[in-house]
Image 1 (tube, rainbow, N blue to C red):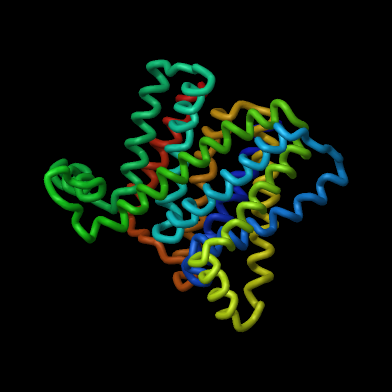
Image 2: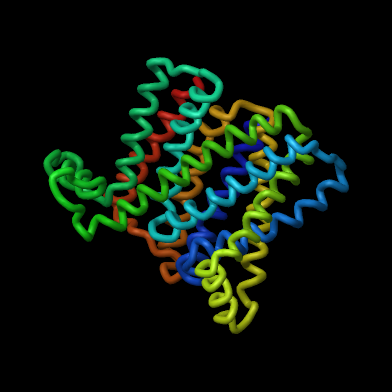
Length: 321
């Protein structure tokens, strides 16, 4: 049951990521501002308490609020990465790193160890992430591959070339985002194992809402939000934004429900279905509506992304089978 719920959630999320990319690229242009408008809606989750009223004790409330605050921080770095690069690059990279960091956290806090199969899976995940993150190159020319990878990640013998800095920022934001996602998933799994699902979900969303209010205390961030609001001459995009956020909320609740019922690593492995939906959707939109979504989609580029996605899918599968 939870497997079907997770797959449906991932398929919805594929569309959400494309919509987020469009809004960040064409409308808002600020990860802080976008995270603010996304997080502010968290307060409306309190209506769910009418379904199953529950009040946590102080310790449970503290954990719930921290989990929600952590998720808001995740959104900031996630939107930074999504804003500056293609959705078909960012989503698989983060998806490949999340299970790696999840196992690291599980080892630190729960003493779980890795088998040889899991170590091999991690190598495959990293290779798939590199394949997607590095701009199109001829991988049969190993010298060129080495130069591209060295250019992206930096050369210890000299400064990073300016043209590779955007990709390096993408890698950094993706790594931080994946780190936060993994910490959130591990923490929220613990929360759901000790608290009722609806109550824990609602109170953790309060943590995200309080984090949004804290954003307003930073003058630079507050100025970005106010500037964006002043620049809005009509609410014509509000309906689209609200629709996207409602779908995102449904997918988020479904994914959290799946996590509460099943194995976190298994659910992470199902992200391969999300990549398939994402690539197909991006190819369709980029071909039919290039003014809405622009991605590099030459034949060789698509093949490279598909190869990287397949490797990530294999690595995720190996972690749980």
